[in-house]
Length: 199
Image 1 (tube, rainbow, N blue to C red):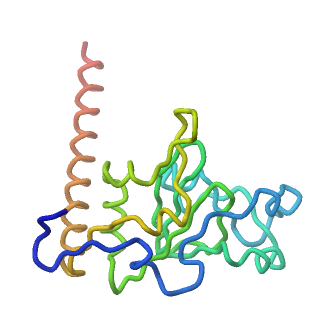
Image 2 (cartoon, one colour; image 1 turned 135 degrees about the vertical axis):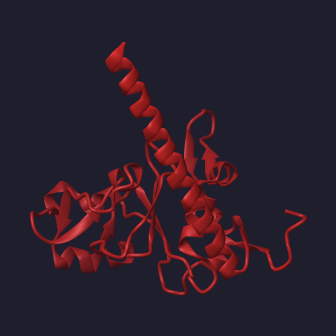
């Protein structure tokens, strides 16, 4: 971090968030989303399942418009990141353009970035980087249990930022590598299935 390329810089997470209110927000207290509030048709409630399974469209619960207005601070939309904060920690999901708007439940953290400063796909890869993952956790006192750090701590985290066009090139290159690795894994699995079939 002491030898960054020209044009790269270290910023605090709080400095790259969207200027909108509630651009970083932990989910509401569980009592705000009791099962008695859930209905069949209405505004979608995002849960841990969504980031853990990288599935932005799965939905189990909904709330009515009145409850949504009560909990509007916890609303999320396309371009937001949802991060799992309970059980399976640190899984991240970028909500795509075609996603239904909704609210997060108590087990999620929402982050909305200033896209004039940060490319979403660059941040997605950065967040999944091992060193970054280690820094988002705190250890519970007297135990080996990890927890996601508080919003105030997360806001002060250092984030390495390159010029925006460079971020886009990095994200594009990593996407191609991921696709190549995924195809390679599929070919290996097919080969193993074929070998078992003729054994």
